[in-house]
Image (cartoon, rainbow, N blue to C red):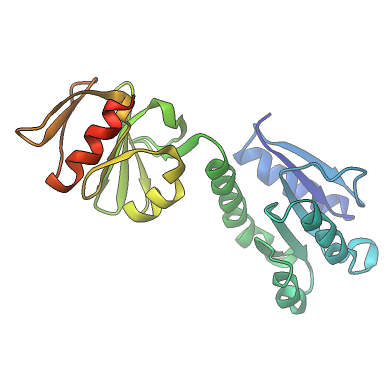
Length: 227
């Protein structure tokens, strides 16, 4: 079980619907359903009914959650669109309208999955058949921009893709401390076999050659020497 999600919803049918949506897409998540406030607020994310027990207790519960940890993602669910603006005052990650759950749930779940990934040591990518994969950053040799995608080269020389700008992908995964070789290419220094200073290039342990710009060579050498 990777991440835990609490669904706090007093309508058992809707609670079951949310749980099934998430389990279909991310069966590794631990999903727990409650019809009122759980005894312990120990979960990684919350789907929270605003009109809990026919009152707006969801807002009060969100406040309590944020008092424990302001970074915890909360996704509000409600039958009343007029509560959307008030819901975002509580820094909600998303707001799902119950009468539009089929339209809005997928985007909310994927946003939550992306957040979990950012907090972990993994990257979500897709193979050439568009099958979703999760790769630990330690298994990535490099990643680079290619059109509207970022391509990820794993330790087995397999290429995966993620639709993203290079800048956004780097921002989302900058904690991995890869090194810029040239515009649109980052390398994991642990996979560098050797660096050719004269020809401004490097060779990965998997055999691939990457160009290195003159402005990035010195920093690359420093990082490589520090391994």
